[in-house]
Image 1 (cartoon, rainbow, N blue to C red):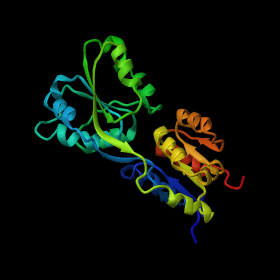
Image 2: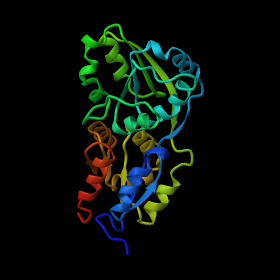
Image 3: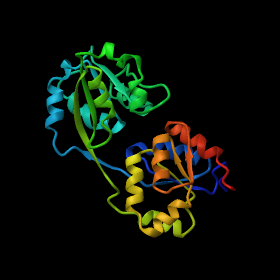
Image 4: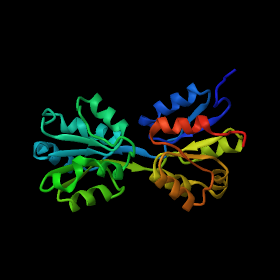
Amino acid sequence: MTTGPLAGRTIVVTRPRAQAAPLAKMIAAGGGNALLFPLLEIAPAGDTAALTSAAGRLADYSLAVFVSPNAVAHALPLLLADRPWPAHLQPLAVGPGTVRALAEEGVPNCLAPAERFDSEGLLALPELVAERLTGRRVAIFRGDGGRELLADTLRERGAIVDCITCYRRSGPAAGFDQLLDAWRDARLDAIVVSSSEGLRYLVDGLSAEGRDFLRQTPLFVPHERIAGIARELGLNRVELTEAADSGLIQGLLAYNWSA
């Protein structure tokens, strides 16, 4: 018989499939069952011309920002196909998962926020103040769409910024029947959402029945921005946790499941 704080609980993990395993293992270690249901499907960018161009002039940049592990996975193979990482080029990342992904690919000494893992946290780093950015070239490796805050702010601070799309995102290709079936069978206890874009795919993609189930289900999110969007969308059982997988699992373990 499974024991632990999450025993008997099924937690939906909605991270992209390539990043879901660490949190799923933590849930299993707590006695729970992780139901993997990626809200974002990740695929290579359809047009690689910008990435190819950036690779050819990689040494011209002073700073290279990777917004996610997906950016690392889809950009580095081409960036490093015919050249080593330039010694002077400072890598930056939004969060610790991206730092690890870069280190695993041989790109060390990455700068990243210590606490707030988002564009605002990155922009607060002393290395990105205006006095140190003026006239410097910055490459941002990212997916299609998303927020423009990072690029716009770096330009306002005097940097010359190139945004390079290296992957594209879409909603779940298989639809939402797996979630609906779990709800109908009363075997879905909570959902973890770590992306505001993924949350919108979830709400927009569910049927009226599914949205009713969702409103009754605890929703664990690691960022106030996602929590705010969830409330705007009519979801009131929102549990804001600390950042990253470590914060999410702490929130899940501390939650009063009998309430």
